[in-house]
Length: 374
Length: 163
Image 1 (cartoon, rainbow over the protein chains, first blue to last red):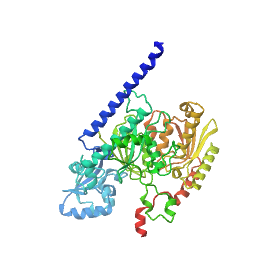
Image 2 (cartoon, chains in turn blue, yellow):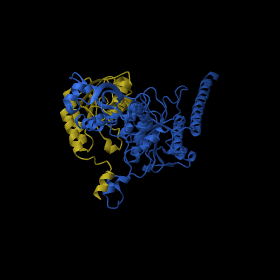
Image 3 (tube, rainbow over the protein chains, first blue to last red):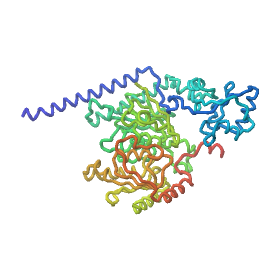
Image 4 (tube, each protein chain N blue to C red):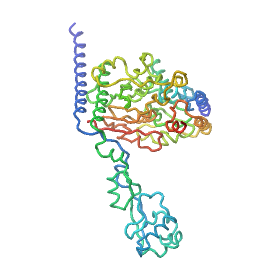
C-alpha cells in the first residue's frame, strides 16, 4: 500500500516546489522592474549607431579663392549632387566635384570637368580623392562626428534628439510602462498556476511569454494573452493578443465560444480579470466601444466614425520577451504604435536580436520599440 | 501545379467579392488538396487571418481531431498561394517546416523573401518558386486596390479637407 501512496505525494511535492520557484522568479522580476532607476531605451535603426558610411569623391583645390562662389554655382548647375545634399560643397579652398564613380569611361577628373563644365577647366590647382560621409547625420552627436570628416548641413529633429538622449520618458510615463510590464508578468503567473504548467527552471522565460495590449488614450488594458504554442504553433502570445483585441471589435477566431458578453472586456478572460483588478486597483481594463459600419449608417449614431478603435491602431504592446519574426510582422499588420519588451530573444527575436523589422522602410507601417526594463 | 494555382485564384476571387484583399491558398500532399482558404482579415477584425494562416489552422485542427502528429504532417505539404507569402506567413510556414511554397506574384510590400528573407532566421527553409499565373494574381490585387478598403476608418486629413 505504501508503495502506491508514495508516488503521488512525491509528485505533488515537486510540483509545489516548481510553482514556488516560478513564483519567486516572477516576484523578483516585478520587484526589479519596480525598482529600476533607468529610463527605457529605444531600439533604433542601425544608421544611428553604425560607423559612418563613406563615399569617395574628387575634390578640386581652387587656384584663386575669389572664384569660389562662381565655381560652386556653376558646379551645382552642371554637376548637381542630388544624393549628397547634406555635404557643404566647399571647405576652405577645397570644392567637392563628384563621386569618383562619375568619371567611369574617362581618363581623368580633368577630362570630366572639361566635358561637363568647360569654363572650369583651368580653375583648379590640383585634384585629390577624399572619403566623405555618404548619408546625412540624423542627430547632433553624429553631426559632430561627420563634421570632423567634412562640413555638413544639419537640421536637428527635436523628437529624435529626445529619443537618443537616454531620457525619453518622464517619470510618470515610466511608472505606467513599468506597471503594464508588471501586469504581463502577473498574467504569466496566473496562467502557469491555472494551467498547472510544469515550467522548467532553465527556461521559465525562454518558452513563456505574455502580452498586454494597452490603449494609451484611455490608459486602459484592452487585451492580454499567454503563449500557447505547445498546443498550437501559431498561438504565440502576440498572435493571441491580436485575436483578443479583435474580439473587442466583434471579431476574433480563436476560442470564441466562451466570449464575454460585454465585448469591451472580451480581450481578457473573466477569471483572470478578477485576479488582476484587486492587484492593480488604479489600472483601467477594457476597450473603447467598437463602432461598426452598421452603427455609423444608422440614424441614431451621430459621432465621428474615426473615433472607434481599428485593429491595434494607436495601441501599445507590452511583451515579456522580444517577439519572433512571425509575431513582429503580425504586430505590423495590426498597426501597433509602440512595443515594449523585457528580455531579448537571442534565438529568433526580430526587433533587436536577429533583425530590426521595424526599421525596414518599405513596410507600410512602423512602430517604435523600447526595452531596458531590467 | 497550374490547376492548384487556378483553384487558389478562385479562392482569391471569392475574397475580392467579399471585399477582402484577394489572396487565395491551397495546401497539397501528393497532388491532393488537404486545405484551402482565402484572406478573411476584415470580417474577423484580425489582421493576421491571411489565407495561409487559415490553412495552417485548418490542418492543425484536422491533425488534432485525427490524432496525427502535425509536425510530421506539415513536412509533406506543398503550398500554392496567389501572392508571395508575407513575412509573417513565411515565418509561420518555415517554423512548420513545409516542403515547398509556390506563389503567383511577388509581394513588394511585405514579401517574406522580397522584403525580408525569413530563411535567414531558421536552419530549415522550404523550396520557393514564384511567377506561376502571376498576371492573374496581380490583376485581382489591382482590382481591390482600385477601390478603397471599406473597413478602414476615414482618413482624418481627408475629412478636414471635405468639411
